[in-house]
Image (cartoon, rainbow, N blue to C red; front, side, top):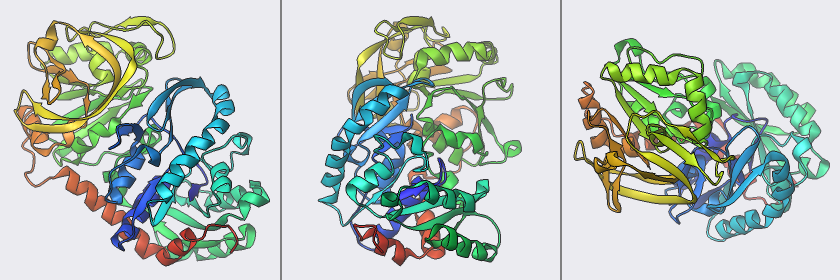
Length: 489
């Protein structure tokens, strides 16, 4: 089990790289994360919803994703409440305090999923969440040491040196663990090192002396990691532009909602060398030079609509339309483009409605049944084939549906304005389809390079991460530790 000294230290990336490295050895590897908290999710092959990181890890294993790979998924709806997904299906919503009482009862579902995977794999790679040092949350824990002790799995502790204080983070984490937990930690690993790695050699002895564990290696800062989907919105806090903005032919702006969801929809656009994708933070105006504005998914559509107006983005979007700019809304962003979004049942937390942007003649009512499906079809504007997934709880009606954006195998989806420049749909992932993405960008004035195959780039990035882990850490020791089922050396 890979645990970390904190959030966003690289646990997901390391599990992804290890999964590919061990899979290349011919082993059947399966990923597992007992509890995840993220609004970046995907539809697994067995029809349920899991975290995007576990979707990527399954891909690294060369296997279809399953709901058992992430049996508990928390999707934040506000600062205090989250939607709870158990084995792929919505259980309900809960406050953080109430969830602490509920979490312990979910261990049975977590262990059932873990045993299911364990029975069919040579090795299950488990990823923790946040940090086991958050001992105030230890009662009822199913994400870190609570699971590790229950399943009796060995642990490797990951620290991120890029943020500083990695020695204190590792030693401090070990000091806060109970004896029953500490015995499970077999080693540590340092992530995101820059510069001469030999300078860290004395630190390894210090960690060994004060924490009582060896170091498996020091993983360098990996450029390939930027080409992989981020696990959650924390990564947006330090995401940098992939391309030179001054040389870009097309400028894309995406509004960063407070409850932004499935923002990996943007990754294929970021892969294009002549496209600049910029995340517009709250308080920032919409740039005047953008060609396309993306309204991404949202876990709290009504609240994000209120925030959108508070930031003045509704005014900026109206000006963008007057400049003949393009707008695309995806899922929650699509709902916002209409005349109204209503939540009569309080699905997102409170009953009520909010006026939409009025850029499409549609209205949306949030409904209690979540639509989850992998979908295929074609884009009506370009005629190109597309594939992706739907994940929403809304029913949309209105005259502009007579001009659907896409034609799926299950029927039409989305709407397009009479000008043809404002559009939206419920489908996620459509920009992953290379031919559609190129045709769409060409309508905006781009001449995308013919050689970019996004899915191939993702696999190449996974391979690069696996190569780096193999070359910078003791990969055989990783495997030896993984094959022990007790924490006793």
